[in-house]
Image 1: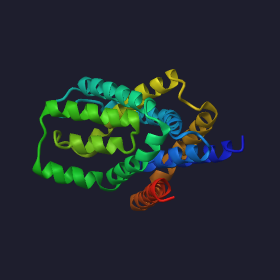
Image 2: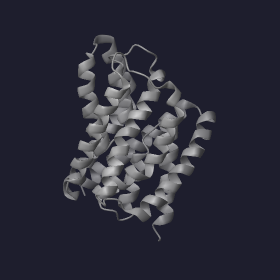
Image 3: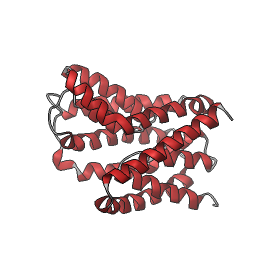
Image 4: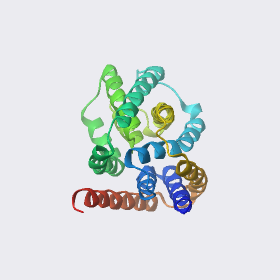
Length: 250
């Protein structure tokens, strides 16, 4: 019971981060590990706890859903669902020791995507275009990543889609939120079916994430975007470095 309050508080922070700039799993996952949840189960529980907030975002963006370039949304959805299931199964088959070893690198990938995803996307878009069929292959791979870990996967999708679709990137937020939620949804179902969720901590974090997401949306209307981004990047960088030190040097 003494871990419930910190877990609830971590959920609030994670929910607020996701509402403001993304990266909520950087807080939720370490908090669950600190609460004594084994690493793989902490990742599955974090995904379940943060899922309702992402689903609410997908619902809010529903009016903007449509194809990405020449690729139908249904095809992207199918690729994402298949990839998400593969990623979830891979996670469930990963030992705690192996996941602990690879976790700092997953956090590093997500940190780079949060920090430089838009710039990388702009640079790639200025030089290359991607064939519609290749988009489905990459989307499947991103679905696998989303089901396995998922940090900053939405930013990765936007960067990849920019090679195909010339629209304002803000107009891609609707399919992004839907497909991120799709990868998470199939992963959540797999985790629950496998009995891989630590429910007491997950429910406490879920409640906190819902409250934090609501508050974060209000803060986001008032706080300068530059400040929000700077705080988010500082937090994610510090957490990533801490995991590298803990895993490889302590």
